[in-house]
Length: 203
Image 1: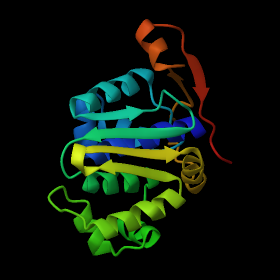
Image 2: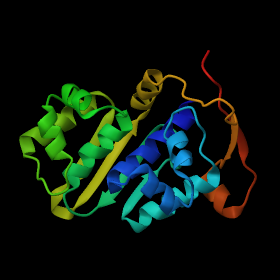
Image 3: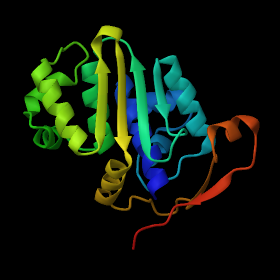
Image 4: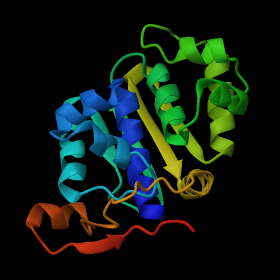
């Protein structure tokens, strides 16, 4: 289930980066809202065509989602303004927790998190560094360079595994347990054969 957890994290991060609802994300990917809901759960495999559309749609928003270059992490790259707010939203989306739980984990208050996630709010540097240091200890690395408006958020392998361990099985009755996923992005573009990824329910 590790690989499906990575893809679920990537989808949640992408949606948080753009501040889209599940319906808005579904509209842009050309799928139904239920597809997004299922794919944001760690034990539901994402279809290859949905994953490829996600990559291209995010590029239009100046956001890059990287799940192909390595199996050891999930990375999000972004350019633009007020990226500190995006960093907070993306990190919380990766962890899939409430604002209060996030505040408790990073040593802030819930009101600070609520304000900090707004794109029109500039977080004070000491608070941003407090958050970043705490997240780094949990396996989430934030590299933010305000001068060049560049942000990278990396969810490292042990963080993915912790997120996976916290997540109970969320497979819906009657849902397929197999999907086709690309062996690599290059294979998807070249039309090569895909391997099957089986989603096993927890017992």
